[in-house]
Image 1 (spheres, rainbow, N blue to C red):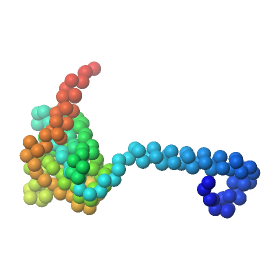
Image 2 (image 1 turned 60 degrees about the vertical axis):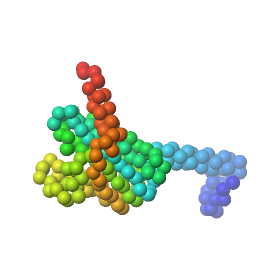
Image 3 (image 1 turned 180 degrees about the vertical axis):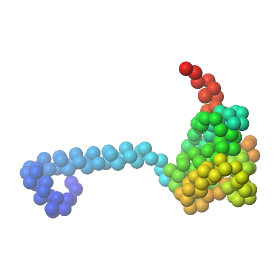
Image 4 (image 1 turned 120 degrees about the vertical axis):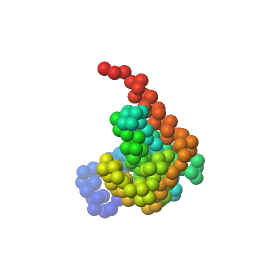
Length: 188
């Protein structure tokens, strides 16, 4: 049995004079506490650390048009997909969808606490704007860039890399799946 501090032992003794009752009470309290802790831990992803790769894509059918985002988070050491996510986001432009996809992906990656996050995007515009190579002229991009800047603070090291669309097929497929599901949803 667990050894309790003397003051706690005395208080328990006054409430539960019999040893068996005290032991049963302590066992029950510990059991409930451990169950609660286990269920909370099960809801949260493991903190991976190390380097993770995030592939994001955003797209719209029409510009502006119905849009969606897709994100894929990969642990390269295990060659394992940690998380995939796709969602329709309403009517926006392609570029806004690309920014929204990155924001969504950064929020997902934050849960895994990587030391280094490499973000792969097939939007050369977004990568060059985030690196400062291109000036941001569109006022509508400013709040998105501000949110990305705030999210970047969660990562000790983060980089943005342009990749051709062929190297971003999985995220692109999630975008198209979300848009296809939206198109096939019944209208009331």
